[in-house]
Image 1 (cartoon, rainbow, N blue to C red):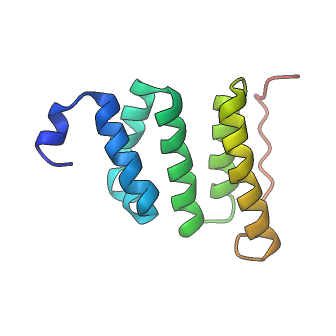
Image 2 (cartoon, rainbow, N blue to C red; image 1 turned 180 degrees about the vertical axis):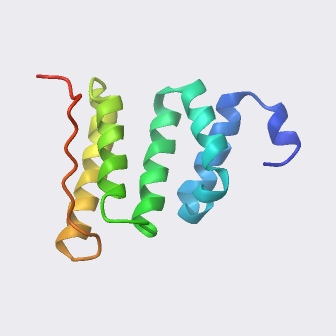
Length: 118
């Protein structure tokens, strides 16, 4: 981040990171720690967009077979009670399933034992 970006409020700083990383998923790697900290502080829609940008970066360059599904599952767990967030995450899930079906992402099943019961 540049010197003046640190003087802006956290939501503005996160918004700038989200916009940068949505445009260029490879940029996530350079700002992951800052983005994660800001998303935790800011929450809400910007934090969701940051999380989605992170998953899209993993889709673009998955380090291993389980990481995309695991990151997606964490987002779903974090936003399970937010209908609007779940709609956005369903779209991301559809993209992941399509890439798996096309053989561009490995199929992975991530079991999470601490899920809320419906």
